[in-house]
Image (tube, rainbow, N blue to C red; front, side, top):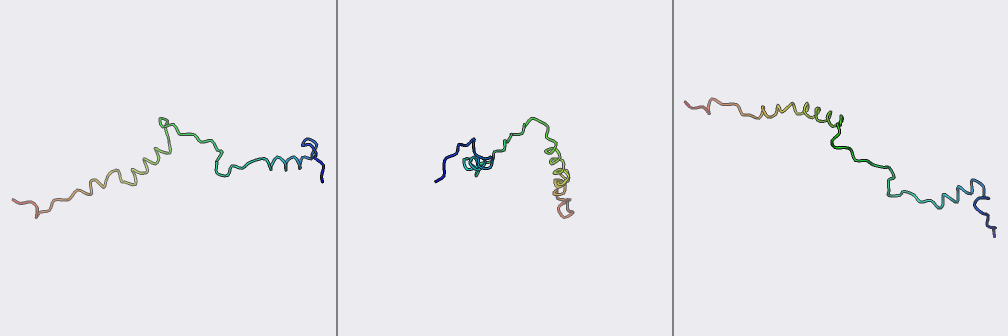
Length: 77
């Protein structure tokens, strides 16, 4: 049977091993602090996304394309 040796008299390696057994893990929790972005502040990334979306949409060109052209058969004199 081994004798009890106080923690402060143990080697650094033994102390580290003892303390590591007592620690818990962050199994399901993420300890990173999160912050909510300020809605009133200027967001350059959001502005770039808005501009690129406008270019992809063609500045509303699809609105003008959907207008049907007048046919001569529709016009009656």
